[in-house]
Amino acid sequence: SCGLKSRNLRKRIKSQFVSISFRGGFYVGLALALCIGLYFIWLWRPERQVRRHTENFFHAIEHKDWPAVANFIGSDYHDQWGDDRAQVVERMREGFRYVRGPRIVASNPGVQVETRRAVWTSKIVLYSADDDAMDLLDERVNSLPTPFELEWHRLSGKPWDWKLAHVRNSALEIPSDVY
Image (cartoon, rainbow, N blue to C red):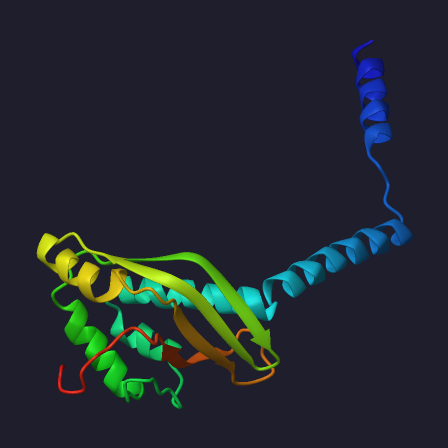
C-alpha cells in the first residue's frame, strides 16, 4: 500500500512538471532579450543620460568629491567667467570649503538635446547647515532670477559618454579676482 502511494505521488509530481520545448524556450529568450533591449534604449536616451549626469555631478559637489567632480567636466570646459576645467574645480573647492552639509536642489529641470550636445536648464537653490553660509548663498545664488544652463557634450558613440562643456547664468556675477 505504501509503495502504491509512493508511485502515485511520483506520477502526480512528474505530471505537474511543464516540459519546455526548444521553440518555447526560444520565444521566452527572445521576449527577455527584447525587454532588456527596450530597457537599454530607455536608459540610454540622451535626455535621461544628461539628467542623470547632472544629478550625479551635483551629488559629487555635495559630497565634496573633487576628483569625481573633475571627471564630469570635459577638458574643453569654459564658462562665462573665464574659467577652464582646473579653475572651476579649484573655485568650487574653495567656495564649498566654508559650506557645511551642502545640498543642491534644482527645480523643474529641462533638457534640450541636439545630436551630440544637450543643455540642462533649471533654477538652482543651494542649502547649507551653516546659517552664515546660507545668508551668503541666499544673497549670491538663491536669489538669482535667471536659471543656470549646463551644456553637456557627447564625446563618443557611447550613449553614456557625456562631459560638461559650459555653464551659464547671465545674472550671476563672479569677479575675476575673487578666488
